[in-house]
Length: 191
Image 1: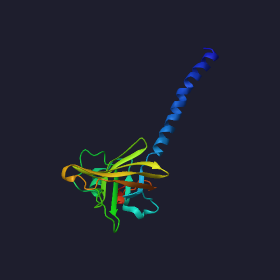
Image 2: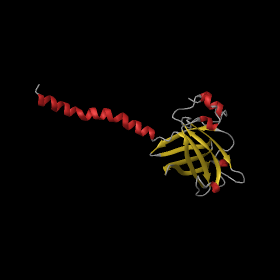
Image 3: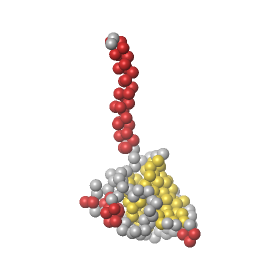
Image 4: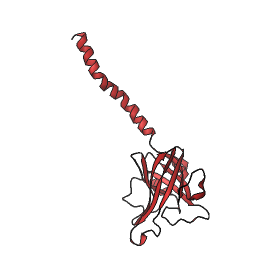
């Protein structure tokens, strides 16, 4: 085989070799952009700021995990057996509190720590902060200036139809890596 033919074949294979080398780097970059982590969370009835939470009604923490909870972890965090079976994989937890002197008529769960599922598509995070067979509170957020900002809304059917079906403002600021102890699970249970 002539030197010219060998060189031509090597040059023809170079783009494939380059793709094999670049592909893992691109996959790693995409993984770094995923929103997994621990977040400070605010729910407001009107536009508000995470640094000036005067208009906030609810504050809390949410943790978006890169894995699905084991049954034991889920039961430690949220021992209720009424988790809706159709819910996405349970890979997030949260704890929310109604701020003193505030009134919230929506369905966001402020009673106890809970587990939920989350999804990330088209640079948007979607999760439920309450779910029952006939009602829920859904959040949809996108990244804006190092904060996830978006909306939350209660929904319901029949007797669970919300009295005040307004759209809330939801803000989430990343405070660190995913740490399920922030939702009430002992850190020794973390992976």
